[in-house]
Length: 119
Image (cartoon, rainbow, N blue to C red; front, side):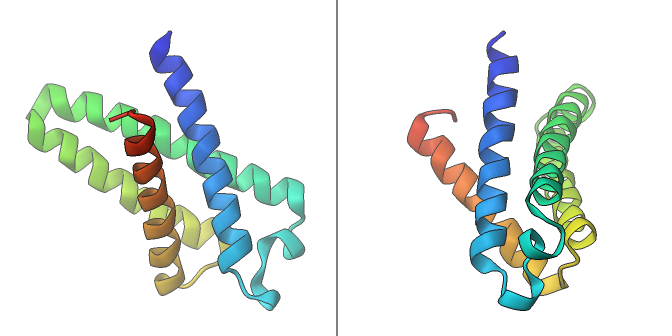
């Protein structure tokens, strides 16, 4: 039950952080909230956040069973790459913008997790 709660809380927090980063870091002409609308942008944020959490859980479990500790690191790396590509595809961002959003969202999520004692 605790894992399910962590999944939904983590996905929700990641969704809000990604939406805030998109809103704050986008310029006036390339803001997805103005181009796609609020509902579509929030849906894309939620799909990317919850999808990456599912991918991370699956890859970590599979990697830990097959490869041990290296599999956990490989699962984390593959999830970050999938997140990065998802930002480029879903939100039409350049390579450098996707790097910025990835660092901002994953870094802030990690800091919040450390602050809240989740790690």
